[in-house]
Image (tube, rainbow, N blue to C red; front, side, top):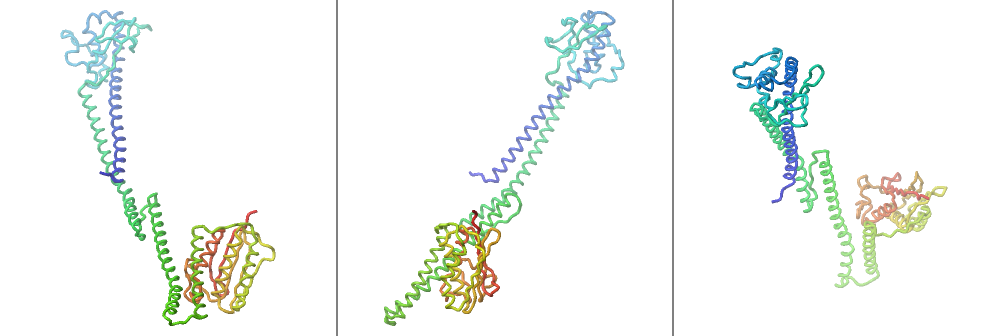
Length: 479
């Protein structure tokens, strides 16, 4: 069974949190036990100092340790005086020797009850030469005994072996309660971590789930699908990028469908005319003649121009058009193109004006053939869509690292909404600029591709002369 991302993320977060909490609880329990044992040993050492004072006083009175070694009851009584609450019943001394309670001030600061169980069993007394005088345990050679002094010289050593474990029931109960509290806290923290992990996992994976579903729909061809953007983090950016991708694919699909429909429509008209003329000849409705052949020839030429334009657009779209660039004078290319079209403009009564700078402009790095094609398409476009008796003004100017070429013609004009679509494939304004002129709506598309291949920019706006203003900006060649 495959685990989803939500379950994996939940388990990872919960496992990390659980390991951290359990490790912390174990370390705290270990530290508590070790620290409590150190505390007990430190408390017992305070009794050593009081007992050492009693032993020094006794040595001052007797000048030896013989009585303590010969009478164990006296040793136990000294321990009881130093630690009055440490001696359990029966360990206070001999039955016939009630314990003496000297040094009443020591009774004001007794140790906690039963904190020094078996205290006397771990005590040992050594003479000045570190020989054992009193001991119930084997004294290690590296012991840290407290020196007993008499008139500035060492007369013995008093030592206590530290505890290695907690054996008293109250102390063990205290440790158990603390460890249980640690375990309870760890369990509560793990439970809270699980709840927070579940909430965080759902919050993080819900956008991913929506993205996965939307991706499936997008792969199936539903380009209108969108995902909600609910955050400003990486997931939100991913959602925005997905929506942008879906929008681009939707527009691309609409463009493709429109492209196919427009091509089919453009091809249908000349083919239908050719088919009608040929069928009329076959049926004998029309007889072969000059007019018939001229009509068929025009339709074939129109069909050929359309196919050639489509081929040019497809080549420029994929970057397959060959460009042989060199540094050239843009004014020369512009003059050559205008010279070719000037007779046609004159025959239609359109004034063609070319305004070039007095001083030679900077050169551009481009392909003269493609630039000639660019200017030819723009001149042909102006020739087709400018009314008789109109005007076309072409200017060339140099501006801060670019050369700007402006084509401004007279009426008819184009609305602002239509200006933004002039460079789209097969787009034509359905007014005076229509199919009757013979254009397929691909000339400006080819112009845009040629300009972009030269690193420039081409735009369209309304002309002050009443028609369309096409501006071309090409970068100046860096010498």
